[in-house]
Length: 410
Image (cartoon, rainbow, N blue to C red; front, side, top):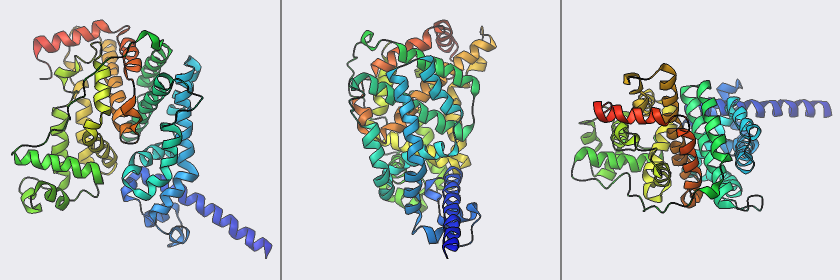
């Protein structure tokens, strides 16, 4: 009897492990919103009903997955970020990048679950202790919250963006080396050298719509997708927000994807990443203003919408193409530039990418915690700007000159 009981226990443990590993795979393949006990059971290679016997519903599975596996991975990454901020060195920053270069599926899944939890009540209940204990803590270990903690949070934001995007679109090992150097030089700078920049409250990046039908539909799409996620953002919900019927929407768009892509592209056209605006981003104070705006509560609608598009792109080719197009707009102008070597063009591409990832990370993390609203960005943004320009000011000046004189990217 005892031997049989142990055998059953061993099988149960093996099944539990298989289910959790399969759940991680399914989170990466289809996204949190498309996770189901049925698909997890199939991925785990278990008999029909095995996952149902273990979990009452998919929310219970996600809660167990976070508590059993994913939370520990998030804590490890966060602590590496804080160590790098507290005692910056080649070793501490290198350890963080070793973690990133050896990212596991569980690491990617932990980020996706963390970023999704805000709109799934049962999931948020189990993720919230991590948010309170780490992302919002003012521990005695970090007495100068305005500097060490803030810098660690911004490094964490960069890591989230890097791992999130790399899992979706692939790694660039050469760029990781560039980013590692930039972050180490930023963190090694003395924060007392950078005085606080007084900034105005930024206006909303998504203004209230006018009478234009497409503008009204885009605004309704921003709200519904940002609040409910792409999967739950039905045309009926969007139509009700815009006071339009689904049939009226179908007169303009063939599908929900087409509507969301058009809304996304309209937002990107007005963003800081437009070519003619980006060439000013390395002026003193500009990155500080950029990050402050990205984290502002005034832009909560934009933050949530951009995040949800990124989360949904895992199972939508149209959204993937739209994101790649938006991210690649700036880099696409580089081959057109003259008087630059291939190495210089690579450096310029990496500078653009670094600022982009920092901003994306702050945008994403702002949907998770209010800590980003109270951050003094200048003590990170200004040394980051100087690290970028340390050996590359001539390249940046040349980019500005060519855009100005030739209208490249307009």
